[in-house]
Length: 273
Ligand SMILES: [Zn+2]
Image (cartoon, helix red, strand yellow):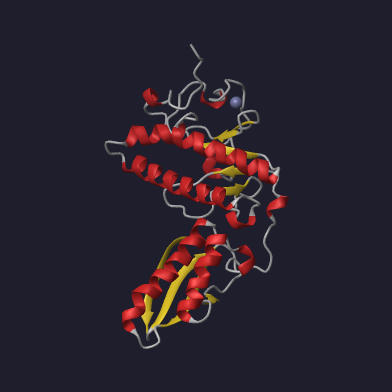
């Protein structure tokens, strides 16, 4: 991510028009976020009668017109109508790479985010790097759906980490492959795979595990073997998964905690009755 300063322009000596100008800028920024062109929260202020916004770009050229969604194009028209020109973008970073990996070079993708992450949840299976959504050949609505799924996952993860009354319902949503959150995520993985022709896996959280048999637990989707490798997650890249099921398009790690086996059944394979 690259911090950028977007200078939208002046209020032309009409402070009463600032609300309308801010609205136009926010519609545009909202469209950029949903399309994966900018990430996370942005900050803005009027300074010397100029509207200035600080935002994180996915890549240095993320605001190029060729990447805009239909909504971004329309909202940019309103920005130009209000300010007289498009915003001026300056990258505020010393080290900006000249080249970035193309999405087509990934052998696989996986869908993953967490409470403190606001980047693209589509990550390269080779490097773990997030792949900006606007680069993928997806319908605009699918990109928006991935963005909103990602926010929903962030909120569930926050609630789980908070360990309050909704801790376990939130954990079930994160760890059970048949939860509403997981099923929606898995559908989105399938859409990404259809559009890119690159295998796309859903990452299934596993916090509570069993003292015996955790390393060889079965795929929670089909009950098949899906064990790939051993090793401690902290000592290896996150994307080097312990488990992967090609059939169910699921990946996961061994559990983090073995202190409360009562919760280990969440996310385990259940034979249908
Ligand atoms: Zn499976």
